[in-house]
Image: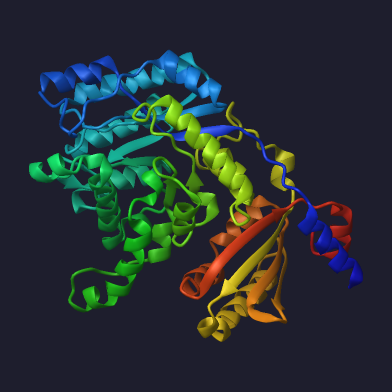
Length: 451
């Protein structure tokens, strides 16, 4: 027993080794054809502000200056009316990806609201152009995500396990006075994003098409506030036959979140009330934000991820590892995750503070999930909870997983999801400290179930 506690002490004292590599999942391509078409349609100011100028050389320079290895490109707003223009932009994006190997991924635009044309373009983009995903607007000409007519499109995307980059567009219909008083990017874009995702939730879209993974922009918009409210009202809405069954966890499991915009430790902690650290990704919003502002934002993010005890374990995950997993970059130029790293064990110390009024209920949840995880999941080596004798609301859990694949599978189990959702209101604070094992052979000797 003394040896075990000494080992835990060494784990807590070890430093975390982090790289500086970055993958940017939120960047926009603004082509000449795109601008010309919008000018022809007299729609250059549809979003209430002019399009920024885009130059590929300047983009790559900014990437090089900030160690951004790869940027994920999507077409900017607004959506052109011409399907041929969308096709040209998708092909130009594919050509750009080929000209600069490893530097760009592309998510193709679709000519909605024509669903049949959108399906054809999605198949062409994913199968022929080898696009890395699809870009969907919150709405196109009033056709909002979540509407039943888009189910056939989602079925196609589901069959191809597509990654979808979501981006807000001007609401439809729009109150022009509201746009003049408060520009869309300052507030309505967040409402638009929340509205579109709420629509999909209310029809259980993402649970019905679970292979589609959707990246939510701008730090999750208002979803950390909206999801608990929607959950609390679901029973009433169902009693009045306004919504059907909603599998909340299945829907949330399909969502990823980028950090474009006003990221901060406080914002990330709010996001973590509805998602897990594995679903948070760096995003810049290039070229809508000035390069020097983006550079300052990266440095600020590196600083707080290095200083905040509950977030420092996630630096590499947020900056590149989560994006590598989402876009299956394990064999591509953008990855730094080796087979050896995939096989390495994960060791964490979870520091949890529980509200006193929920302590007994929390302990029941925690005891159940720890027992079931160790009993049912062979790669879960240890979940060892302890309480501070001076303050019983302070919980510490030693977590050891055989490798990352085991940990990812653990997060999706029914018993873990029951624990996570059931204890959201009970936990006052949570810090996950990832540790560097100092003696892996001793670990194997102590825990014989590890192969």
